[in-house]
Image (cartoon, rainbow, N blue to C red; front, side):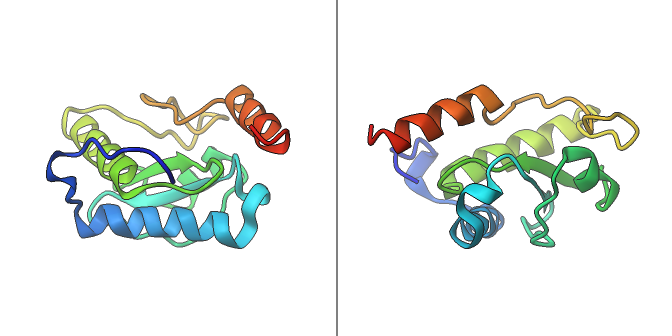
Length: 132
């Protein structure tokens, strides 16, 4: 992904690098078919089962909802900086008692920080196809 890293010292944990690599691998392997699909990442070490789930609820049902964060994939994968920020945020939210995933809710539960909306994805795809 492009952009400037805002993480202090531009260093990232192995967990964030693992998470970013897995999301980028999913994009590389499936490209547009991966957009909007969900992946589960371990809060402990950033590992994943590499399954692309069609819905967040499916990802939550197949993974421990209290030990994973669930990310909707967007075009281009994920940078290590974004992964670091998302891991840190989700860890702090869980430690503070927030429940970020719910297998009983049709949507899989609320997202405190949604990555991008379906409309944002549509706009990105449209811009990419027009060469912007």
